[in-house]
Length: 591
Image (cartoon, rainbow, N blue to C red):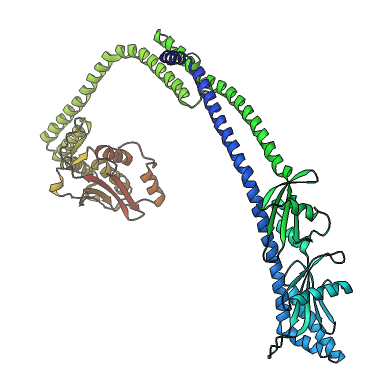
């Protein structure tokens, strides 16, 4: 047994991936098909039993629907028979009133009957007779033959005051409900003063109840003992039907050589028995047809899925095999991309994992080839780069030495202002060109601002009203280098230069619990809402000569996190306010 298992593992391990994928899909499809087909067979077996019980339930519901309609009609005849106005008029008519009064009473009685006839559907007419034999009708008038009249009177007299049913016959195909009208006067003598006859459209009731059920495809028969209530003509003979009906409520029976599904239900309310006959083939031929169709569908689906599995496995393994071939070329030192060098070929690659492998391999090979090509060129330019770097270090020193010479010359000639400006300029140059630290203290940044303001005050004199209000205790905290000076330069450029009036520019601090603000504000012309939105979004055009607000904000965020940065507020005619949020952080020695 172990040898067989080992042989199977070796055989499976030596298979190619596409064969493994095909085998796996085939086994899964076969297993799923077997489980599904078995489940369907089990479901059909349950369905075969359920359909018998459901058909019987449908018959019961249909019988209940017919019974409910008949109860409405019984209630209608009861309402007519107990109507006080109708009883008063019947007693008057039984007293043989004069001709005109009798004519008026007849009209009133028939109008009253018309009102009742509108309350219930599926009736032909409501007829009321008095003891003198006068008839009052609402609906389709149908005179009764003497035999019908005697039959109706006999049935109604069996239970005075109760509704009695007269079944359809050859003379009249309608179902008739008859009830004796008894007088309910003050002394409750309960004398007969007339009779109510309601002609019912039983065929319409059955049709409405059967619509939308399985009974519409079969036959519904209503019987009272040996008498057929519905249908009057056609249908199966009752004795044969009753002979086939068992006690279970439903069964299979054979009538006229054809199999039928028979259900029957007895109603204790009316004493009627309801039978339904549904052709057996009509119910189950579709099920048998569906079974065959599903079997064919499973076979076709299995073959289709197997064919798709072959194509699917090829679609997975073919790109992998091509990738393996290119890897072997790279292993031999050939870093050419082949057809992967064509962008159109790369664009056609799928976006799945295999396609990503191809794209990653293409990027890797291309990068290796570029590195090999560039490495030699870089080695050749190293010394030239080092030489230029030395030159770049010489130029700032030459500029500093020149400014120092100008400073001593100004002092020798008694020009303290020129000397002061040169010293301030030298200080600014040394701090701006020094790359030693990216973070400095607030105090160091304020020193840069003071030297810058010193130069600008020589230029603008009394027009520049500069104010600095930053407590000494905040000078030890860190700030990115060249943060306040560019903001002050922007304020001078946009608020002071365009105007001939004095301009106030202030730098002040606002301390909060977790952080503090350094605010640069001016009372210049301000910005329009549109311009302010562009500035906040970093889309505003600049002259390109300095450090922009977005650059300052990015440096603050990179140094301290996204919670810190710049907030710009401005209104036309109300100046501009730029607030820098910084943490209480010390130890400014970052490069």
